[in-house]
Image (spheres, one colour):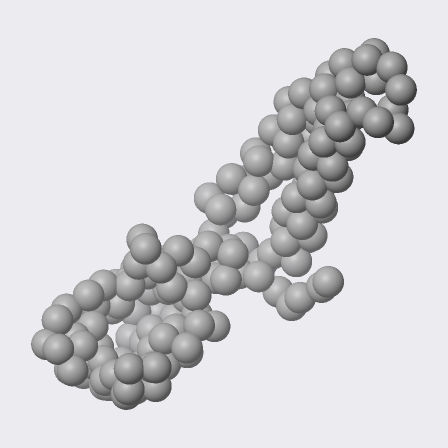
Length: 158
């Protein structure tokens, strides 16, 4: 499965590289030891411990492959090079929910960094798409299951 370019920060790229290194060195070694230990127990055809270790190995290799693929299509972006006049990726956006009069701040990130509980929203999410390109004072409308939500852009920072 391939996707387009993923925009990430230099820090996020470093985290991914470190995770790949950890998985390839320490985690591969741990699983190899589990497989060797399970093999030492004899007949592999009825060895649940061996089957579990081989499945764990497959999942690890899949994770490594996914991270390497993500890194291969990553484009590093520098937040200092992006303007503050509109909402872009890596913007911190303070908005007013006009429906309930509450203020909230979001950090606009790529899909791979999105974490709604930490107020990091993907620029490709419905809310992210509604906010992208807006200026301070403009409104963004989002059609949610509970109905239309209107957000007013209060502030944009990097």
